[in-house]
Image (tube, rainbow, N blue to C red; front, side, top):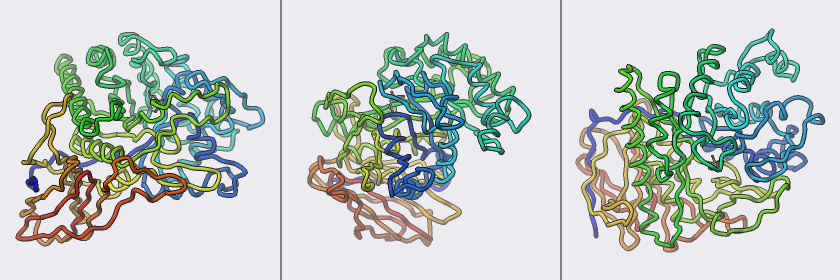
Length: 499
Ligand code: AHR
């Protein structure tokens, strides 16, 4: 059997996780909002139209922050369409996804929904068809207490107290030519700088996320970050990264290696931020917001014709399988390993659209990717330890040598808990693991979870919702400060220890 050694030292730490590392995303896209979180008239919804079964699962995930309302959608959005009396709200042709937007759900409904979910909101402003003026008005509507046009408009709409939204995305994927109002890096950087400056004049407590590249392989990657930050480094608080992976050519070994690309992406963006910092002789360190990450390719491969201008079309409804969950697990491990610089991350998305949670009119079920996300959110908060590994690797065409085992160790000092997260990418054999925890006395294994199976393509559906789900296993033993365990082939693993 192959073997991997993991070494950690309580004094060698990456850093503390920011809770917002376990965020997610709801866009006005497909059935994420309508028939997803908002389904008036359905017996599973409350009087406000909020699906209670969905809310229960979102609460279970303990999602700290949710990005809204887009995504590509935001670049053509008029937020005023979605506030005030519902019968007066216009129906619009939504150009990003070619759907009909009824605006029956908007900003205030989302704030109420997020409150019910126990989540903070990360609000995106439209930098495509709009810009500074609109961003300022929206911020005034959301955060200004009273006595001005937009704050009083909010109060007229029934929201006496300001929403106090702290985190703001200054547009979405402005580097992409698919984006409504797409810009060059210099144009966007300048507009972002002005917009944040004005927004901070109105509310100096906000934090701003500026658009980085929509992927490591985007043609402008690197040049884009550099040029944007040249314009707005001092105003911005975070730079965003987006990345989706897929098993496009049916090569599972290659697909399972994908997070090596995410790692390279993060390291490169950190270098660019620090290069601009040095050029500007700035004292400020810029942090990263990985505000769209996931597997997304099943629905793209289908090439199903989605009729234009329908309400809540079935779009981007990827059905996830075991290998997708393993890739999601390695992406979470990668984010944790970079907790010193990545402060915010959003699994894109949350409900029905490339999502861990799916709905029908009859109920909800969890996709395979739900589980690594749940485990990371519940047990991944704390101090990430510098996790050194010694073990076998395999050769990936794209990323070179990739270790079969991907792992990270998180120590929650207050709760006196340690969690080992690991994915065994080996599709042939289990992996014997020895994790040196000698500096942590008095801990014992309280839980060992594993998600594995013979069939990498096994998936959860409404009819068979628990085909792929974590199981309790009991092979981990703690002996003289070393944790020994066997991780099944192609598996997601969580070992929890407590003092
Ligand atoms: O999450 C789906 C889409 O992916 C988003 O709208 C966009 O930002 C990205 O390209």
